[in-house]
Length: 314
Image 1 (cartoon, rainbow, N blue to C red):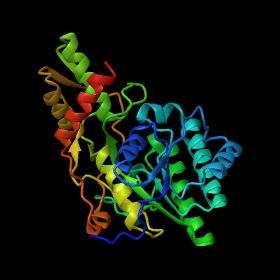
Image 2: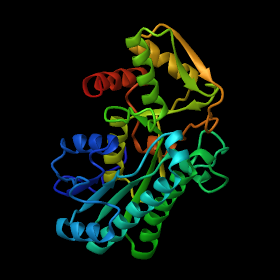
Image 3: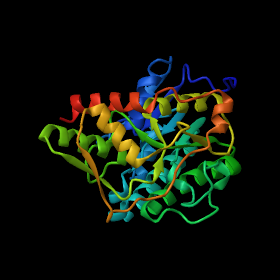
C-alpha cells in the first residue's frame, strides 16, 4: 500500500457538500480520524456566491478540502436543466478553487465524474481517454463543468504549485441518494419503482430504454474511503478513476433490485426513452495498484440503500 504523505490527523478538513450523499459519507469516515471536520450548510454559505465563499474561507482557514459539492441528477434532469448543470457547477468550482488558493489551503481533492469521458471511448475507460472524443449528449453540460474542475486543479498545480488532486468516481449509490424520480439516477429510481410496485401490488414496473446499456456502480461508503485514501497518499496532476470493477446491464440491475426488494412481477421496457451511454466501466488500475479496492458487493449495497430508503424516504 502507498505510504501516507499527508496525514489528515490534526488537520482542519472542510467537506464541501457535506449534506449530499458523498459528503455525508466522507464526514462519517473522517470522524474516525483525529481531525477537525468543518462543514457549512447552504443556509450558511451559498457556494455560487463568490464574495461569500471568499469571506467564509478567509475566516475558517481549512488546511484541506474534499470538494464534494455539486449540482447532480440523472438523464432527465441533465436533459431539461442544461444551464443549471453547466453554470451552477462551474461557479461553485471556480469560487472554491480561487478562495482555497487565496487562503493557502494545503490539499484539495476535487471529485469529478465518469461522465467526463467520451461517449464511445474504449472500455474500460482509462484516465488517458479524457478529451479524446465527443461527450454523451444527455449529460454533456454536467460533464463539461466537471472537466473544468479537473483542469482548475491541474492549472493551480502548474501555475502556483498547489497540491490539488482529482478523482473520477463511477456511478454512485447509497444512503442519502436522491429518490425523486424526476432527478434520480438509475439505481435509486429502480429502488423506488420496485418498492412502489410491491407496495401497490402492481404486476410490473418499467425501466427506460432497451436495458442493454451496462453500468458500473460503487457504494458511496467505498468512495468515501477512497477519498481519504487519496488525500493522504496521492499527489499528482493525473486524475484517478475510482470504480467497483464490474459492470451490469440495466436489465440485470433491475432484476437484482427486484430480488432485494422482494418484487416478483414483470419488468417492462419503455423503448421510447434513451439508453444513455452504451457502456460505462472504469479502469481503476491506478488506485488499485496503490492499495485501495472497493469492498461492498452490489447486492449488499442495494440492500443497505433500500434499508435507508425505508427508514428515511417512506
